[in-house]
Image (cartoon, rainbow, N blue to C red):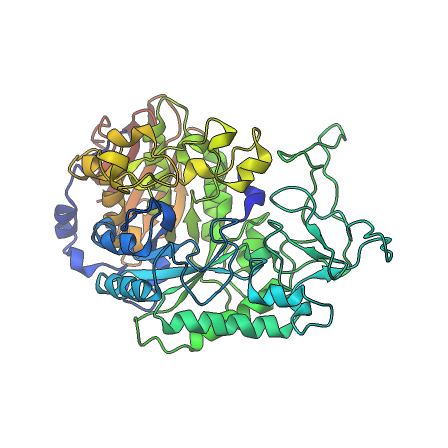
Length: 590
């Protein structure tokens, strides 16, 4: 939701069973079992965009029963939890992020009975369901806002942010209270003629912001969180959570200038501003401490382990990210998203190394949540690909995601290499962002296309015309085609995730960077508490590279290969590991 920051074959050469046997372990001895209290520390979480995942009733829109239908597939991937983008009743101005009822299910996705069945069936497979919790704003059709805008003396008036205009008179609305802009273009203030005040909306006009200075708003969301916890959900992803509060003095945002001191405009034609007056203000922390306390006190009798809080946290530096975990004794998020790694948007070894090292050393021992992709950003091919080696590059990204310490969040379709497929003309656009920003910003439709299950009509997504067109790549890029192919992207994801769950060093080991002067290859060491070690090396270039991975804490000069690019060779020694273009090698030190 937070739009401000939008921005080829591999083989398992040593079977996992053989590798585990060599350590005297078995796959059942996984250190990452999802039933444990600290399951989130090594969690594999999948974001599903429900309207694009699987249509079960032939209306062209994905639904809850469609997700239930695909749970065995998700289990085969090794997924611990599913984050669902909003499925609440909504006018769909922002495809569900404008919520009109926080305790219901939108009919286009199914019924509450369908939701209960999804939770129950997922639980049988040790998969948690995570809800998207949108606390910054509601729909303008929510009963609370309808009351709020009905009169200035309505009890719900101060549930939202209302202000007089500058220079307002009985006959003139005056100017907006300040220069704040919506993340989706133009002023963040909307005039309401009936009550003759402006209301504030950080996002769409149809998404008025809550007033989090009102204690009644706090209590309402505690009740909402409790409602879904009683339903057996495994936690929440908190949307746009850093934007809950606004500057209490209502000061203008600073105008941004280029290096020559000139102002510049964004895709919507607005003068570019920073958003320090409406983003990452300190009031967010006590709010999240309150909400976390609700979840932590809740009796976990429906599913063992903690209820996880994930934060959509686009932040300027690692110090601000560290704050999102909360101070001692006052926890906030278990897993605030580390978008500083996933959205670098270029394969720069030095930057990746520095930020992965930050995640290891600057988060006070807390668990990083790495994420490279979501429903608000072009897919991996568009942000990291070179047009020639896209699949190999996507394997490199997946390796960083799953072979680094911490939890991993990926987006539906990444595991088969789905590509960004934006509209080619404005009349094809569904996303209001694209309608406002066209042609500079084509919107988010390109990363929300239907899941590609097979090569049948509509890629097996629906028997009806899908709400967004199925990309033409579906005939070869689909689950059925990749399911049995040893060198497919799907096989790569499955092998990486299995290693993450069954290898002690990859499940719980510390991260330490290796070969740190190298500007072309990113390499690191994972060391488990039992002393076992795994080394990982990723070539960030289109040229073959040779690296020396001995030393730097590595307790040996040889390793058993766990996973490698298909054109890569078996290294005879860690002194000389040869990597093909955008190649990957993972080995267990011996």
